[in-house]
Image (tube, rainbow, N blue to C red; front, side, top):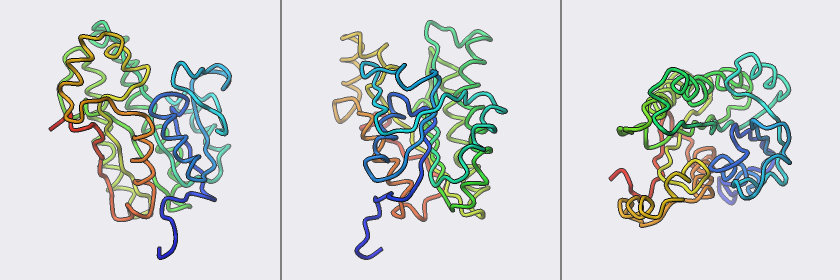
Length: 247
């Protein structure tokens, strides 16, 4: 690697599932800025259906509408991407108002936050094996602690961390490096339930040693590291990026 920039992804292709907004969009733009061709999957029909006010910047990204929780649909969409070097799974949802204690809310969150991870990972395993590529699963620090109002969210994120370890072990012989990222409080539309309430936000910031929320671009930096040669001996690890909140 002497003389080469290990964070230069020129000539590489990255897919970011859930890259249309928030953390996923920050990760997608990080790979774009590092020289990669970046594909993004989202839930809306067209890239124009997203706005900057929602934390979306799809300029320069190749957008497709794909329901990541539809196993058959994922398989079909994956066939349209014959070669890929990096797959980032950043899809996610949450149901507030204690909706996750009910069957519909539980099933919705688990379907997106956990089941769809395996659907996507399975679909792209052959391409990642061919490229000796990298799979990155984005979970949450909620996977490491209780989340009183959101049992499905916490359980799904704990499952995502376990899936990262297991696929890391299972697919390393194929030359695929599987790792993960567990964000803390990051300023996105999913955290507006906190950021739109000053008192709640103040209490949250007081619990973070750095005293601020994270930005999607900072999760992008973590993803670049995990996908790069700098992490060539890292397998099955979930990197916590939370400003010290879990400490």
